[in-house]
Image (cartoon, helix red, strand yellow):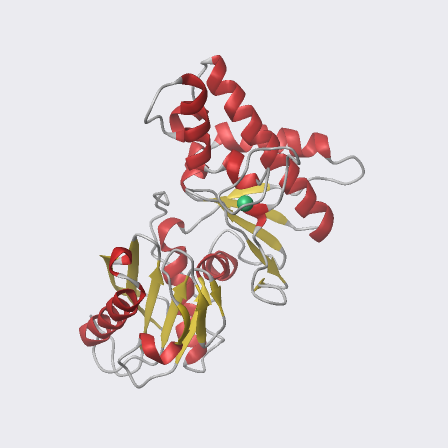
Length: 317
Ligand SMILES: [Zn+2]
């Protein structure tokens, strides 16, 4: 640890099951990286308390005071308030409640913060407009427009997982019918295969690579749903590329090849954007939070020059 006073920020990415935290220097060095469970079952106040403790612990592990704090959380978020998160149960938590430190803090939406990291440091480096689509237990999206994640008028932007792809389709957990996520998330692919085959506990990765006719049918519907949603996105926003991440992207060509083929076929008058794998894996949220921390500290220029020592890891769903 060679961080001197205020030459690092505290970065924390809060998920529904675990939190990934770290200290990141102004040159992009990850000085420390730790994971803790998110105590969701203990209620929203316990989660806020656990975040405070974790931020305090990380800051105390550095050499001197941090310059700022970046915090990525799920749900509806503004830069200074965690407005609402269904899975964590909180509403309207001001940013200062999350930190025991007297340094600036900036909040970000979890997926958009990961998208920011992919934009500045990862697969979207040098690309101004793309879609970051992590496919895991659910399907989320970060629309990167002019190099920045776009959250829309009220912060609900990018919910591509809940685009209706099959109008008369199955009901989604969100209440709508025929959502992309209901057909193509890793959890849905496993669930739909189990329902039809009667076999329990089958993971999406097994369905994707199986030649069992039921598996082929379930996977074909997932690919169909993805190609419909991606064609819609492409026609609306004309992205330079589509970056697929999350656990299902680890399926590699078994995912990329059929989705690419179907997307190309669906678009008549324009070329399909290339599909690329995400580059930062499970570190995307934490690295994006580090960028937010440096923005909070008044150093928004940091990031593009970083040469990262990041092992690309699968995003465990
Ligand atoms: Zn839905």
